Image 1 (cartoon, rainbow, N blue to C red):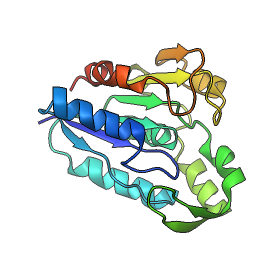
Image 2: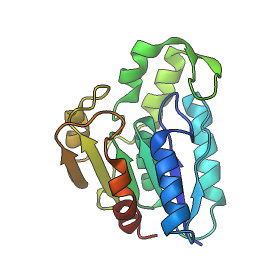
Image 3: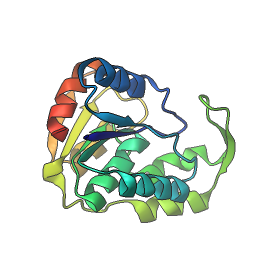
Length: 189
């Protein structure tokens, strides 16, 4: 049975809108695909260890999709595990972006409290894929109206990948439900 691994973003959860839309689509239209959407650890090294262990444990073909920080992780999964990935409004430089969030954090979905430190920014910098060699296996879904991330960074970083850029929208990727079926087709699941 093929598997879709969905990776949520910073301070998010499997209860995020896109994760739920993807899960509902699969339940209704593609029950032959196993859906995995873990609650990721709050800190980078722990989150990557968790993701890598999940990938190591998947039997059979799989693809990965991720939004925001989840797109950062999905790129690393594609690079390391040789699978296809869809990245949705991805965080390209999270070690820079999240500098503004250093200090105490509360995940609004889980109420988990944790401290985000400069050491975590260093972990993100070390986990970044500088120049992905897997661009033919990546699909960027990007909206220019993203209020959190500069869409131009993603366009530059993923310039040799398949790219879908839309005017307007926001960080949540408005209209994501229309991309569930194409996402599965791209991942070849």
